[in-house]
Amino acid sequence: MMLHSRIFLMLFAISTVVTIFTASIVSSSMGLSIVKFFPTFCARNANSHLIVTTEDTSDMSKIDYNDVDFLSYELEHQIIQLLGDEVDSVHKMEDIYPGQGRLKGSYDKHMQLNSNSHFLRYRHTVLMPFLRKKVAGWQLEIFYNSMFESFWPKMRVLLKTWAENRRFEPQIMQHLAQYVKRPIDESYSSLQQTDTGTRKRYRTCAVVGNSGILLNSSYGGAIDQHEMVMRINNARTVGFEVFVGRKTTISFMNSHIIRTCAKRSHCWCHPYGAIVPIITYLCAPWHFMPIAFCSSEHRAPLLVTDPRFDNLCNRIAKWYSVKLFLRRPNMKPGWWSILRNPKRQFHYSTGMQGVMMALGLCDNVHVYGFGKATGLKHHYFSQQSEELKEIHDYKAEYEFYHDLEHNNTQLLPFFKAAGITSLPNFRLLM
Ligand code: C5P
Image (cartoon, rainbow, N blue to C red; front, side, top):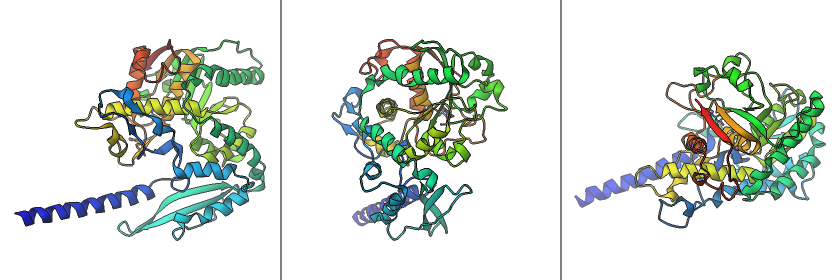
């Protein structure tokens, strides 16, 4: 009997080790387009640093959210390298990256110039014997011709300012009107020759998410009635006007989209019209290169969100995610980062940050296209049925929106610290 249970324990231990090993190889080498060598904030690794100061899991205020500020070693290192004195050009950056220690041996450099000859792309591939194929591990693109070289100094200035602002300062919410609305108003005034007025806040705002839930109603007309309409990640509107409307005041996106736009001639990134301002949040330090390039090509402002604002969004998203996680039986906060999802990555969704932005800019916020249900398409414009990477905690974010609907600042984490005493009227339209 004893022998049986020992054998059983040994087999169990071996299978656990094999499973963890396999999972870590698979998760680190499949399905990621840029990650690994240049991992991104927008899929931040959530596997460490959850500092729990108490075992009393019912009291969320005792959980420390500092970890969401920490960058992975690779990202901190990347900032240092991009800002360092020794790297003063794209070519030097190219010299630096190929030799990075732990990638030696498996490093596989391909020079793939795209049709515009703007990029040098490095690809790292891993042979997966049991899958009998090579899969892409990480990918790095360097903006590699004389055209991009000239944006190197601008990229460094932008990155330096950004990096200096990385801290928890939730009062940043009070300054969004000044940092965001004002330059946008000025741009519309000069490009459209119209007076957009001097109001600090928009009267009514529609934040349009991309959920397939939009196809269940015909909100297009109602959306277009708002003074400010925010769309997310360049989602298509043509052909869907009945459901999503035509008007766009602000185009909000993650910096991967800018990176993709930069590959197009003149950084074409405006499906809603050339005068629509773009707001983006940074997913990787080197994205300031495409941002520097695109901002010079874009007629309207291209704004990057303040890292203090990103930090606040991240904390709120995590607060709700941990809260939800603790509803599972017998869970402890410290297990959140390991057990929440198989990839152990976490980031707020772009739409959630758009909603936060609207809270700082608007008197009335109406939110459309945020919702999930069985049978619904993930995006109204595609056949995709699920989120691809599971880095967002949608359920947790929906809880946040429901709390916003109840308009109770006491319920909302970090809002007191942000100095928010009264909230805009908030409605989630499903
Ligand atoms: O997928 P994508 O990020 O482009 O969608 C924009 C936003 O819409 C998301 O970041 C998310 O906040 C919201 N969304 C949602 N439910 C979906 C799809 C998107 O709430 N099924």
